[in-house]
Length: 333
Ligand SMILES: CC(C)(COP(=O)(O)OP(=O)(O)OC[C@H]1O[C@@H](n2cnc3c(N)ncnc32)[C@H](O)[C@@H]1OP(=O)(O)O)[C@@H](O)C(=O)NCCC(=O)NCCS
Image 1 (cartoon, rainbow, N blue to C red):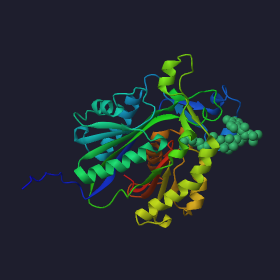
Image 2: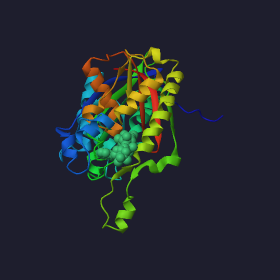
Image 3: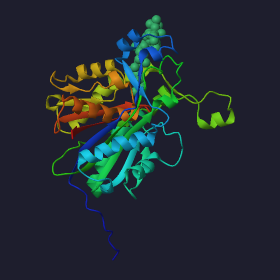
Image 4: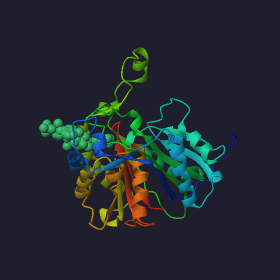
């Protein structure tokens, strides 16, 4: 008879146990951004809702920002770094092809020996990572640290009128651990790879190697195309994620979508038919679009504002380059 494998005993359910964030010191207003592009504070506020964003200084590296956010999440979860069994980092602004930033984050935090890996799914990365963390806890137990961390300012072309004013830097982290009751719903995720060119790096690294006279690679996007896709397709994904969890909009206390544009958030809120009482995250106003960091940053800010409280039922939705998306219902920590 063949030997049987031993398999780990996972947790019956998973939930977010703690959240933490780090916002860079320097606040950048629209007037500063408009020094390089033909635009105005009025246009940026009206078209995106953004009033300020934060750009990281040289000492506020991905590792440093992630460590700050992660330590707060670990403390809020009531565990110690040594209890972390896996680190997943969602980022696409780690400018070193290898090693992953996740192992540096684990080391900085004192999560000695914990495995770590990065995932790249653009602005949808954090919710992808959260879904994997939830599955990992249910398959293997333990506590998974999920960090969304970006230095978007490193890949911005300050003279590009369609991106320069949108993006900001920061880090947000959560700890996912075992739970007696369901705390993270099934993920609804997917991608439309036929639209991979809608948000992309201006030149690949090998093209820069072959012709170093080119400008450093920057983020490029077709803003209006992404805007339309987000408004029409992502509201449907939000409703599918509620369905998958056996919920309706009426069951929600909070909505934490990716912070890409206030008008996208408002359009989704309307088309989902969210009741007025649902707290909708609008971190975009003072953070801009922080890509992989936007959902945990917005969640933390919503809780800090008191508009949402621990135990509330929230819908989390990330979307961006790929074009990729991921949405799930979760109980707020
Ligand atoms: C980028 C974005 C803010 C542009 O807003 P928009 O309403 O789509 O603007 P449009 O591109 O249709 O341009 C409308 C007008 O504003 C002008 N305009 C474009 N950028 C401008 C700027 N930075 N400042 C001032 N005017 C600008 C255009 O020239 C155009 O003028 P016209 O009507 O005279 O031709 C919006 O498309 C967006 O937020 N997209 C989603 C982007 C995103 O966050 N992606 C990241 C990953 S999710």
